[in-house]
Length: 120
Image 1 (cartoon, rainbow, N blue to C red):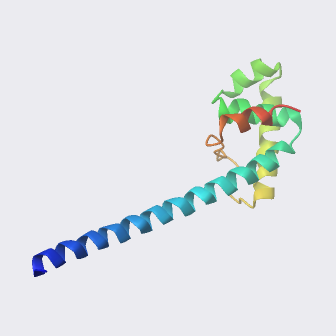
Image 2 (cartoon, rainbow, N blue to C red):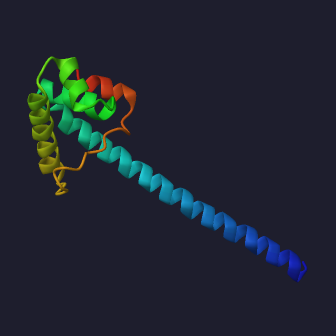
């Protein structure tokens, strides 16, 4: 086997190794995201119904405070209060010490899980 052919084979093996490492990293990241998703769902399912509904409308449906208030027949202040209490509890339980003004991103949840959250 010539030197050139050996170099080509070595490059192919190196490329495969790099692809395998990238795939492994993707798989690990995917599993970590799924674990976090399940943990968030478990915590959200324990929230009072009104807090689950507020989170559902605000984060899954991307509704404004005003739209959420109208949909649930509540004042803006009540919606804001329910949202803040729910997010504070999520942060405390999930160990997230982020700024209270930051949104918790729950949008990556599968639709079947999103629907079950607002049901009793």
